[in-house]
Amino acid sequence: MDSKKLSQKIRLHSLRMTSRGESSHIGSVFSMADILAVLYAKILRYDPKRPKWEDRDRFILSKGHAGAGVYAVLAECGFFPISKLDDHYKDGSDLSGHVSHKGIPGVEISTGSLGHGLSIGSGMALAAKMDDFDRRTFVVLSDGECDEGSIWEAVLFSSHHRLDNLTVIVDYNKIQSLASVEETLNLEPFKDKWESFGWNVNEVDGHDHDQLESALQSIPFQKDRPNCIIAHTIKGKGVSFMENQVLWHYRTAKNEEYAAALRELEKV
Amino acid sequence: MRDAFIRILGEEAKKDPRILLITGDLGFKVFDEYSQKYPKQFLNAGVAEQNMMGLATGLALEGRIVFVYSIANFPILRCLEQVRNDACYHQANVKIVSIGGGFSYGALGISHHATEDLSIMRALPEISVMAPGDLWETEEATKTLIDIPGTCYFRLDKSNAGYTNKDLEKFEFGKARCLKEGTDITLVSTGGILNEVLKAYELLKEQNIHCRVLSFHTLKPLDEKSLLKAAGETEAVLTIEEHTVEGGLGGAVAECFLENGVLPRKFQRIGLRAGFSSIVGSQNYLRKIYEIDAQSIAEKVVRLLNSDRPKMAPNTISNK
Image (cartoon, rainbow over all chains, first blue to last red):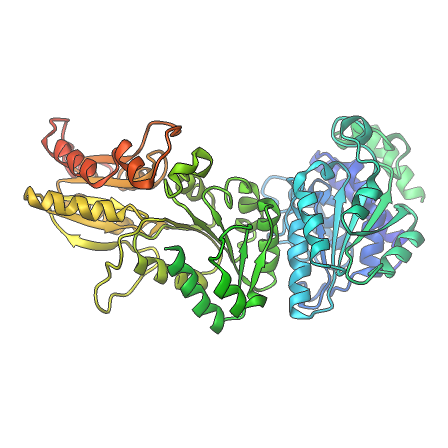
C-alpha cells in the first residue's frame, strides 16, 4: 500500500468528517496523518477480515481527540465501508469525536481522556511477553498528553519490565490545547527524559515517510528496552493556513475555508 | 477476609493459569506463599495506581483474569477514570480488590477510611459490586469473580462475621442471603459490619424483637426481590453499612422500594452521616462513636419501632 496516498486520504476523509459533523481537532489529525499512514501501510500486521485475529499487532491512539484519523485509516484499510465515515459525530452515530471501539472493527481501545493509552498498551505488551507471542504494540501519544503523570508511570513500568515489543510514537507538534508546549509545560529535554527512564529513542521528521518507516522497521532498537519515536510534526500539516495554529485544535473548516483546505489537500 | 481471599485465589490460580494478581505495592507478607507458588501469576505494579488499572485492562483484554489488589480508596479513587473508561467501558475482566472497607484502617486517618467507595463504584456502568459479610461469602465470592465476566469491585473488610453458612448452602451472585428468618423487622447489611448486625439481632431477640437479617454480599446487581418481600412481611426495614448513607446500600434499597412502588412501613438508613472522621481509632471504636455498632443498631431499631413518625401504609403507591 502506498503510504503517501493513504496519508492524503486520511487527511481528506478527516477534513470532510470534521467539517460535516462540525467537530474539532483537525489540526491534531493532520499532524499524525503520516504516522498513521506509515503504520497501516507498512508496519502493522492486521487482517481487516479478522479484526480480532490473535496475532495482529495492537495499535492504540492515546490522543483520542484525533480519532477521526483512525476511523479514516481503518475505513481505507477495509475494516468497514468508507461510506460509514459520513456518520461521524452525528446524532446516533457510534463514530464519536474521541475514538471509541464499540461497534467499530479495528479500533482496539477507546480513549479521549489523555494519559490512558500507554498503560493499556503496556498491559497488552506484557501479556504478549508472558504468552510468548511476537505481536507488537504501538501507542501514539500527543505531546501535551505527556503532562499527565500516568504517562510517566507507564514509562517507568515498561522499561522495568523490558517491554521491547512496545513502541511509543509521540506526535510532537509542539502545540497543545491553549498555547505552545514550551509556554505551557516545557517537555525539553524531551529525548533525555525518555532515555533516562530506560527507553531507546529515535527522533524523526514525522512527515517524512521514509524516516518513519525506517525507524519503525528497526524495532526493537535494542533488546529488552521499549522504543520511543519522537516524531517532530507540524500541527495542521497539509493545509497552509492551519499549520502551527492553536486555532485549528478547535475550529471546524466551513464554506470557503473548507473549499480552500480541500483544494490544497487534493493537489498533493 | 484478606487471608480467605488470598487462600481461595491461590487454589483457583493453580487450576486456571489465566488468573493474575497485581498489587499496588501493598500486602506485606500477604502474598509470600502465593507469589512463590505462582510467580508467573503475580505482579507488583509499584505505587502507581493509574498505570496499574490501565495495565490491568490491557492484560485482561488479552485474556487474563486480573485481580488488582490495594487498600482502602487507592485502587478506585486515585484511578477512578481508569476504572471507568478503561476497565468498565471495555468490559475488561478486572476484579478490583480493596482490603480495608469502612474503618478497617480507622486509626490511619481519613485517607484510609473507605467510606464512599460503594456509592461511587455502584454509580459506574457495567461493573458489579460485592462486599462480603463473612468468611464464607468471601471465599465463595472470590470463586464467583473468576466466573462472572467483566469488571467488579470487591470490598473486603478487617472485620467479618465468621462462617454463617448453613450446610450445603449454595452461594448465588446477586442474591442476598437470609441469615435469620424473623418477621418483626428486617436488618439489611452489606460488608463486614454483618458481625455487628448479628450481635444486634441477639440483643433485640432478648427484647422479643425478631429480626430478619439479609446479607447483601452483592450490592450491584441488587437483589430487589428479597427487599420487596421484606417490606411486605416485616414492620420496618433498616439498612446497615460502614459507609456513608448517601448512595450506598441504604440509597440503593431506598431507590428499589420507591421505584417498585413498595414502601416498608418504616425505613431507616444506618450508616455514616457526620462527614469526614478526623477522629481516629480502631474499627470497633469508630463504630461506637458513629453509632453503627451492635448496641447502637439495636437502640435505633427500638426507637424506630416506638417512633410515631408517620407510618407509611405498605404497598400503597398508586402506580404499582
